Image (cartoon, each protein chain N blue to C red):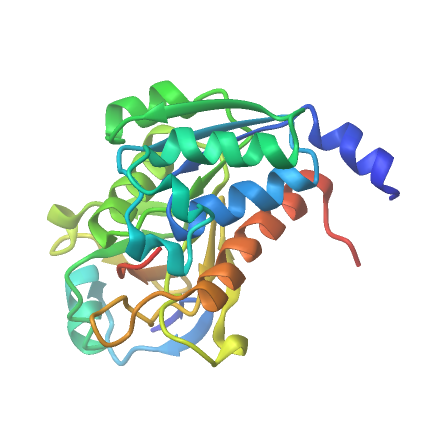
Length: 195
Length: 67
């Protein structure tokens, strides 16, 4: 499939990105570069200096809302992407409201309890909607442990075990692998397997 | 009984099995889990009663922070 054909398929698609941190910002940028039609990006947080070790923001954006800053950055890369940016904390009600028109949802939260919340919400309340989650991506090295595993409409990208702690922080290279694996999984769902 | 656990074949040395028993046998002590039996999510309050049967496809997903 050539890039024109790929783009003609992707431009009709809408992806929901739940969280604009390390996973969400990098995954959204990858999808924007290949010409996804619409992104619905959600985050309630503001950018702080410690985010810059992995998140797709710039030093002069410290203090800005992540959802709005990410929209600006994506539009500098590809102004053709339609972006709905929501400065909002996601919960089981607004997830359904905001993401029900999406072709796929990307789970890109930091906290484990929020990951559980969105996985339960989508699996229970939004049947047949693919959810691509990122679990286990902290630290460095051991690139080959990061894998995609599918279970029905749930796709998990990560090593499943590397929790973010004080001594094992999430860092750009490994978070980037997982975030781009999420974006690559989105493409595989939308375009089919490329054997 | 034979089940599929996290995409691998497992033999559990029991005739009947609940989700709570499986977690105990496998020593899964994590706090935040998503459990699916044959693609259906099992709620946390149902772990003690939810039965796993021969041939079931069980997913136990351990949720950890980082993103």
